[in-house]
Length: 346
Image (cartoon, rainbow, N blue to C red; front, side, top):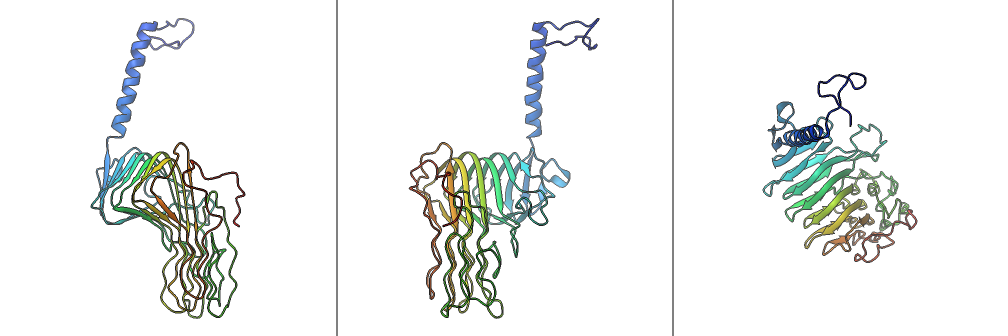
């Protein structure tokens, strides 16, 4: 490479730096780059009902900072970076972090579609969730990380954060006590009023919210489950719980929401006590239960999901129970769930 010792432009009159000198400078530049990167990542932003230690104004984190969560609920929105270096939640943390990550193209889309953790996520306590939805599909939890550890004392819980009662492509709508559908059909009411909707969405790469139960009379019924999409480049360890169930309602004429969706793409998945559910719910005595949601796991190098359990069942009981999501995934000893099958519900 050409470079001038005296800093004059290359070309006529310029001098070529010797290979030995250039090699030394290159080493110095590389070393300086390493030091600069280390310095940029030196800050740890700590949340304990307020920020401290981060590189931003008021101690908030920058995109190059590590994040430590110790106490208090936190809403992560566009006032904070969409990327951080690492994320740790203390084992004694009992609060909830709500991410306002949105579906791309949704009404009111802020552009905050994915929360990225460049290195590792370690959730030792507390809960992750996404913002609540209502009549439209706006929010889901979409996180991309280098690695992820969800310990037994922590959870990702989006129960009831899907479509509200009477809303969603699988909801029977108004004047109905039938349960919401998604991966499986909702159940009918004791009187058979309303129309149970067909399942919808992809079972290969599920991304939709669960639908609410039917709206009857004064508005009884419950919301469907939310949506979780985790992209983990390396190892994912799951000993806690990921829950995307439909909401539990009040007894009586309460049509229940369907389960939501959980989609995991990881290098490998291991765990001894972990669980993933997207179940429909039921609390009524004369109305239908919610149908099961959808769960899919795709592993790049792993050959099994270890002892992690999965369930996307329809809600039990009632005049007719909700249906479990179908078709069922293949044996979990396979390294990848099929991605060549039709992407439509059946």
